[in-house]
Amino acid sequence: MAKFSEHGVAYLTEPRPGVPQAAEPFYWDRRLSVAANVGAIQHYINKYERMLPSSNLFDEAAIMVPNRAVEERLCNELTLGGWHEFNSAYDLVHTSPFGTRYIVTYKFYRHSAVPWRLEVMRLGHKATGDGLAGFSPLHQALWTDGDTPAWEDWAELPVPHLSFKPVGQDAGRAARRALDHMRNEMGFLLAQGCQSTYGEFWYLLHQDAPRQLYIKPRINRRDGA
Image (tube, rainbow, N blue to C red; front, side, top):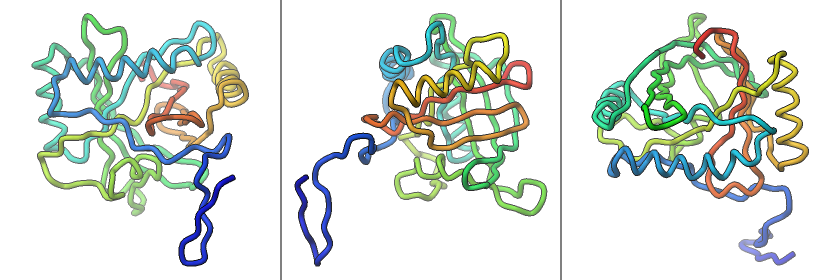
């Protein structure tokens, strides 16, 4: 394998099988129309849905906003684009393997011509109730400089995940089968596991992913989640 050296340190210059290469996040671009962004998401849904276990379909894509001001602007843009809010939620999430916790608010949107929903998610920046600040390593890494932006006119918003509920009468067993299928047969790597007040979910990244877009199987313990 080819290498180059800088200051006595050797670096690999060719990809190694099974090791993900550096990739930028996939963004919702507010400079484009809502329809154009939805079309870009649909492209990745088509790409990754073929890798899901048989009979499973994506039913959600997420957009992450840095603060309430950007959330309000994005939600207004979605409404003007024909999407309507049908639910909202607030959760406390525990991450694995790092053991951090974070709070998050969700707003859910539907469109009559789109078979999946949009989740607008905003991570909390206040204490989680026991004096510990909320932090998700995976989500924080999606901001380009590693720090959540504070300004209002933020144009590129990370799309963290495409999500699905594994099909099966026993939710836990169906989720484990889906995880085994995607990791052992489809080349996905487990990036972060989560337990929350609505259920349990996992973030998977394909080893050849061109963008840092995670696939999120989830188990619901709460109606409408």
